[in-house]
Image 1 (cartoon, rainbow, N blue to C red):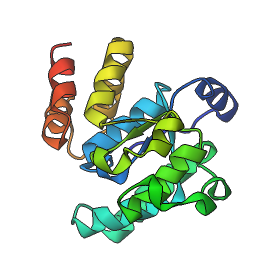
Image 2: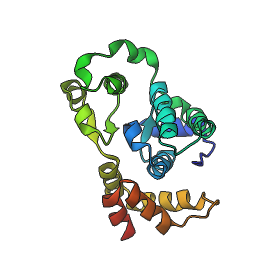
Image 3: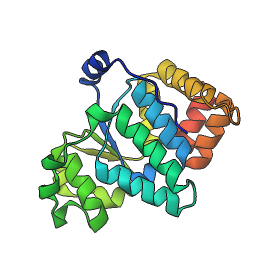
Image 4: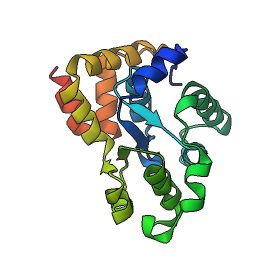
Length: 202
């Protein structure tokens, strides 16, 4: 279970206002290790994680289908995320009527692309970059990249803060206990080998 800490809303929202708004596609929200680190980095105000109801509903469905969570566990994680990151939900009325075929060749990804275009998103993290190469996204200034590449970029910008976030995320794991080195190895296996190699040498 990802550990979310109670925020001081006024200060957090004010500080997050100037950060990159990052939408994380379902494909980058599992394995769970990558999701855990990305949420921790967002909690630590290295970027603002923005989300939609469709995204979390899809995540719940997919992670259960892949056998990585029970339905109850998936709902618990989703509820925690919805509660903690409430200020950063992209309002449905901004994008739901704006879903068009030219946003993505994949019909299931069009609603996510619309949320990015009309939700003032700066960066979209996805493993399926070919599904998010539309002209509409480009014209809206949405940068499409992988979680691995974005984690490398964050490390280049904020090496000490990223290292501290990894230690904090590891220390929150108690059953079983996880070290920072363990977490880095999990990130390597979960699809972030470039970032794991960089942070391992920190």
